[in-house]
Length: 425
Image 1 (cartoon, one colour):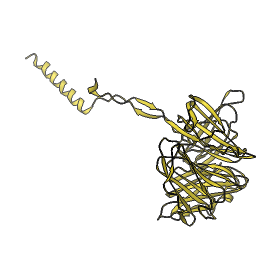
Image 2 (cartoon, helix red, strand yellow; image 1 turned 90 degrees about the vertical axis):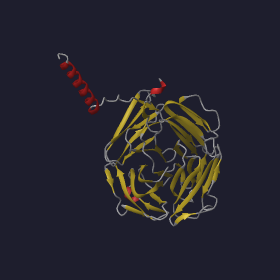
Image 3 (tube, helix red, strand yellow; image 1 turned 60 degrees about the horizontal axis):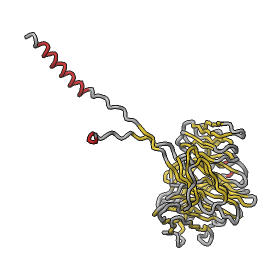
Image 4 (tube, helix red, strand yellow; image 1 turned 120 degrees about the vertical axis):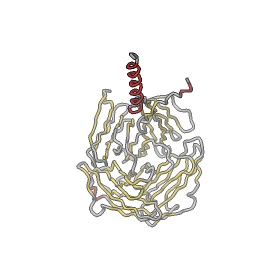
C-alpha cells in the first residue's frame, strides 16, 4: 500500500509529459544558410578599326577572366583593358563585374557598358535615316536563331527576311535598319526574339545626327523608368510601343526632377493603339533640365527616350541597379532616379589622385532624381545600392554624348543547408 502513491505519481508524470509533447512540440533547430555567389557573363562590343579606336576596360572587386571571343581568356584578375580588339570581348566574373567599351573617331565617339546576352530586346525611336544597324553576336557554343519584328506608327511592318535569322557560334550578324529595309518618316521600333540560343544585341547609330551604341529594353513591362536624361538643348522625344495585337495601351507619364514628380501638361497619358508606336515630344516639358521619366501602363510596353542635338543618344527603360557594379573611372555624371515611395541611397567607393580611399553617397527622395560626380581617378569605382527600384545611368559627354545604364548581376543568393538524410549515417 505504501508504494501506490509513488506509482500513481509516476503515471501522472508520464501522462503530463505525453500531453505536453502533443500540445507543446519541441522546437525544430533553426536551419543554417549558405551563400551561393552569383556569376555573370558579359560581352563588350568593338567598333570598326578602319574608322576609329576601340578601348575596353573591365573591373571587379573579385577575380574574373576576359578574352576575345573564341580566344584564350586572361589569367584571373581584377582589372584589364583591351586596345582595338579584333572581336567582341567576353567576360566571366562575379555579380559585380562591369566594363565599358568606348569607340572614338575624329572628334566624336560613343560608349556602352558591357552587357549580358539576351533572348528578347527592343529599341524604340529608331530613324531609318540615322544610319542605324542592328548588330547581333553569338558568344555561346551553340547556334542561335533570331526573329526580328518592326513596328511603326501605322502598325507592324513586315519586310521579308526577318524570320529565322541564323547566328552561328562566334559569328556576328549586322542588319541595316534603313530605307532599303522599311520606309518610314517616323520613328520605328525594332524587336528581337531568339527562338533558339541568345545573342549580344546592340543598335549602332552612325550618321549625320551623331554616333551612338544603344542597349535594348530586355523585356516589356508595365512599370518603367528611364534614367539619365541629361540637361541641355536639343530635342527629347519619347517613343512607346504596344505590341499587343488587339488592345490599346494607356500609359501615364511622370517626370522625375530634383524636387519631385510632375505630369507634363497635355501629355499626362499617352494612348498607344494595338501593334503601334506612339512618339511624343517632351522637350518643352523637360525644360532643358536633367530628368528621368516614369511610365506606368495598363499593358506591357517598351519605351525609349532619344536625345538629339549636337549628338544623338538613346536610353531605353532598364531594370534597377539592384546591387553592386564595379566600373573603370570615367569623367561623367551618375544620375539616379527613385520611382519608389521610400527614400533610397546610392554610394560610390573609389581612390583619389593620391590613391587614398574615398566614398560618396546620395539619398534620393521618393519619386525624385539626383546626381553624383563620377570619379575620373583611381583604378575602379564601385557603385552600390540596396534599393530594388533605383535606376542609374552614367552620362558621358566627351568625346560624344553617351548614356550608359548601370545594372548589376544582383546579390548573393541565400539557401538553407540541405538536411542530412537519416539513412546515410
